[in-house]
Amino acid sequence: MAGLYSDSTRLQGPITITPQAMANYGVDSCALMVIPSLPPTVVIAESTGKLHHAVLLEAETKEHSFTEVDDSLLIEPSEWTLHVTETVELELGLSAAKAKGAGSSYNCPLHLKRDVINELRYFAYHNAGLHIITVNFISELQRFLDSEAEHDLLVLSTPSSAEYILCTKFDSSEHINAVLGIALLQMPAGLVLLLSSGQVISLKLVIDAQLLMSAKQQLTRDTAETTLEQQQLAGSNFMDSIKSLLQRSVSQPILADKLATPTAHERYELLNQAIEVLRTQYLKRHELVRAEFAKRINCIKLQKQQQLQEIKSLEQEREVISERAHKLAERFEEISDNQEILVRRCQNLVQQANAALPNSLVAEREFSLEVARINKATQTMETALETAKRTLNKQRYHIAKSQEQGKNAAYELPEKQHRTITEILTQLSSELNRQITDIKRINKIVGL
Image (cartoon, rainbow, N blue to C red; front, side):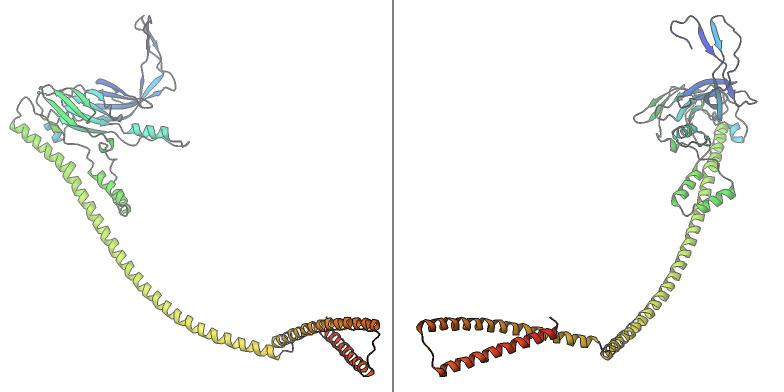
């Protein structure tokens, strides 16, 4: 760390790498790359084909630095530490020794290049071809940082995957056809490679990293069978299990032409190795998938038989329920008829009881009708009485007027006429008195 105008350069180091290993990290290191994740991910490549993925973390305690080796350098203790989370070993070429099971002894420098399209992925090219490595724990780090759970634990359980895309060395000879450089295309996504033989190869890339991720480590046979039996009812889980079974740990790369023509023995060894890869990584997995499909079909058949039995039992139960419903309907109709008979009997009993009571409803109704009749008759009589009163008043007026006129005229009626008029008036007066007496008697009866 130095400024543009600083007199001396300030260094920190060395950086401690954990966990400690018997084979020290980076003994044959040939390349270094930093992926700008949070925290940063450092990739250390060895010429043996090993890739160490480490996370740059703050050191809990500062390590002691080296003594001064140069007066112009200022060395300070490192504030950081590298924690190696995993090591990925690449296959450098398809040699006959590798096909026979022996370890590959071919070493060559590795060159690393980031993928600007997918931050989880980078490229490693070398003398034996091209690899694409996907660092899966970076997405787990991001999910851990985005999680709001207080007690969430960070577990980096998903291993990284390495796909051998292009192979330029498939024998044990010294001839190589190294990849000199690569260029990344974005639209469309692809790679352009320049080989030492002068060839230019273009490859298409899959943008979705999920298609390049390797499946998790396979479970044991018993655990896998139990898990698959539990997942039979869910189609999506079944498809996921089939995809996991089809995932391969070793890919068959594209073979590039060489400058030198391989011998018949080398071709035979290469053919045997390709057959072995196809047999172990392709055909065997397809056999497993076929077995899983057979289990799935048997499970579906058993479920179908069980469902048919359930349908049959449900139909029988439906018939029983229908018969019970018919019987209940008949019983309901019978009870309804009996209820109507009982209601009619109760009505007759109530009528008889009311008729037997002294203050029955019928007597009360008849009394009410009689009171209404008397009230109507009383009103009629009151109207007639008012009419008689008006007539009487009119007659009295005429009599008084006649008497005044008679006095003024000094006219006297004959004795016979006088007696007749007196008798008529006496009768009218007695009739009015009798009617008044009747009205008072009726009012007393009615209670007015």
